[in-house]
Amino acid sequence: MDKIGPVLVPTKDGSSTLHSSEYNAHYHSIHGAYTESMHIFINHGLRDYLAGKKKPINTPIKIMEMGLGSGLNALLTAESINQQAVDYLGLEAHPITQKATYLSIINSLPHALDNNLIESFWDAPWNAPTKITPVFTLEKRLGKIEDLELTPLSIDIIYYDAFAPESQPHLWQKEVMNSVINWLKPGGYLLTYCAKGSFRRTCKSLGCRLESLPGPPGKREISRFVKENNES
Image (tube, rainbow, N blue to C red; front, side):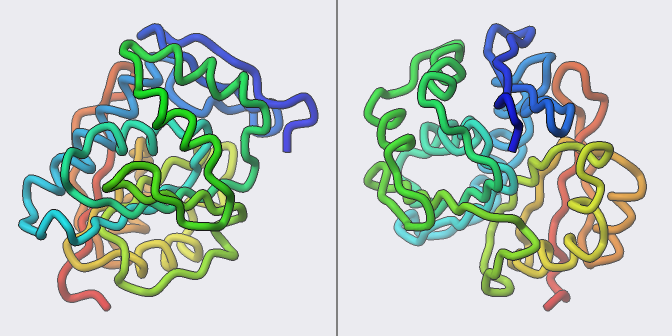
């Protein structure tokens, strides 16, 4: 964990993010933290997935996030669903410990989130599924992805939002990604800001189809991987 803790940083769309001195990396894009989250994970992840699937709304969509961080992606997901049930597991090795830091990030968004949602997210215990809204269940899981054990073929969408390969290279290598992709259901999505060629080749070799999509401001492309139906 950072010895001095992550530092609050403003981004170009008016929202704030954090900078980790330990990894010399920002939690979200300095070109717009909110814009990046909405573009990659909500629009090209959650919304595109739901548009293409015809699950009953009371059958939960299962989402796993690698790098819960400030909680921004999780909160925007909770806000973006209406009736569709979602079970959300957010993995974080170094959680934010100061509520004031968390609130500074959430209160910097271009629109106000529901205060009950904000408080319920912060108050939710670690390592225990907690109903945050009538349709959104959150589990804040403390730990590293190397130690995470999930049922194969159980996850609909993965938000892969780890620090960049330059900061945490092992999180983007084949050994870790083999486990991650094994958790995805056939037809499931893995979303990430990373468009590095070696990472894309790794995921393709593990049975995913690459969809290269236009990126948010400051990023030419992002990656969406779709789990092929013949993988087990």
